[in-house]
Image (cartoon, rainbow, N blue to C red; front, side):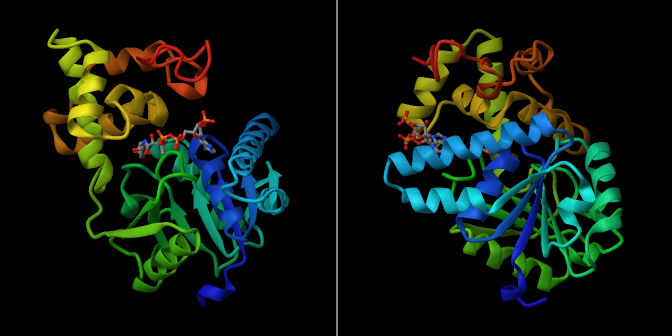
Length: 295
Ligand code: 3HC
């Protein structure tokens, strides 16, 4: 396939990452099929895109016309055949569980045209393992966006053991067309580059509180003002989703060893469904408005 042949993109999963990726693709002029497993999930994702485009327009980062045109390019769907039946590129952003992703790919390969390139937004899972359920492993790669996709400039493009060079080039060109900077990840290891560095940082922040060295607020202030990261470690955890961080870490722990053992403080957020901003509470409480208790 030539890059210019890419016109329609399916984004599977309308959650935190999926809706953001769909928004970015629509803003770049692509027709987007936004798919999730039920009407409610797709509607929520669509409404978040609407909110985000409004916000960008209010701040004159895009025009009102661009916001409306971007929204018009997005078709929310539940049916998988309708979602992928006539698309050139599929970006999957369903929950970070190998079984769920494999089930989704089982359906995708049934309906997606042979020409379609398949990319997963997995944060850490093996690209090679996922590619092997697609019957077209050469046309499969990782395309890892960062939260929030509309604001974050980087996309990791990850090669699995079977990925064709042409697939990687198309994914890189697409990331650039989205206005992003692609970085090629040459080895299919858990966490790739960013999460390999960032997720242990977030886990270590938890251990620092767990062992009584500092409070969450003290760790976050240090990380922001002394180390110079844009957000504190706990703020970032709440932004990314504590369930996402936990699953990445669990997988790194399983594959890379005990240095990646999840801290109980992080584990508790998942047990208590304090997943972060998306549910209004995480390490911090957002019920009283975004960032209500962030110092
Ligand atoms: N669309 C539109 N507007 C949005 C938005 C979105 N999706 N998300 C937030 N905003 C708005 C906020 O509502 C706020 O609006 P307000 O000013 O009216 O209240 C505004 O953006 C905040 O933006 P600012 O530029 O004023 O604030 P910052 O300068 O703090 O920038 C940030 C925000 C870009 C998110 C910055 O804090 C940052 O870069 N944080 C780090 C994020 C990061 O590292 N993400 C990667 C995590 S790792 C990951 O995702 C991988 C995964 O696999 C785990």
